[in-house]
Image (cartoon, rainbow, N blue to C red; front, side):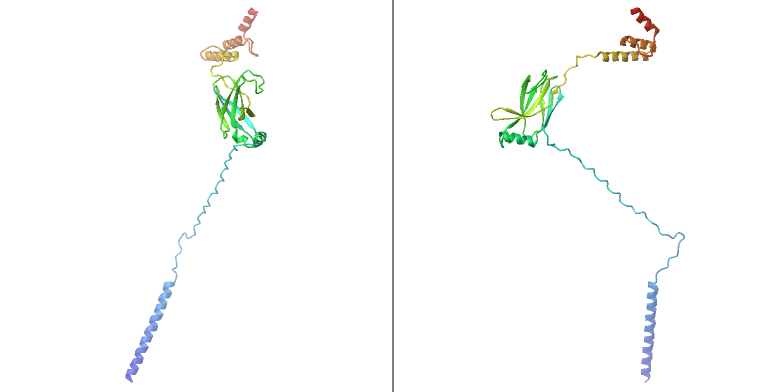
Length: 244
């Protein structure tokens, strides 16, 4: 009986100890999970940061490319220097069709393209048959421009673009404007006005070296042969009266 009582007492103590430990663990866990309270500081506020939005990309400028062809017939001739010409051209599809209708569908790619350069120096009205001379220059079928060496300065030229038939006949497709090569030497044409301006420049130079302005005006009058309006010089008038 005594042993039973001791056993019951031991079980009660063990149960009490277990309940105590369980309650203590729950309180500890509850204290651990409790959020920490932060003491307010003197400047306790939320800082706002400005949002940087990316700058919009500027639209790229569209690159405008000039068309290689404009669909119209033209042959332009220019003087590059005293000894060279430059020509550029375009033959429209309509003119090619007319040529093919006249000479056959295979004529356009088969016949040779040619530039005929006319020397028309001194010719008032060029009609294709009254040139001083001419020379033929073969060109490639894909070409649309050509540098032409004429080797003659101060001469007037005109150019035809055409095709050469198997018979040797030259068929004109386009005719250019008239172009004159510049002189290769100093011009022998003298302009008295420019000579007078040079004398005025010399007179102005003399004025800076000590010549008085009335003498300068008198010299200018004598060179011009007239008295400028609003300017008088007794010495000049007396000289004119003596001459008369």
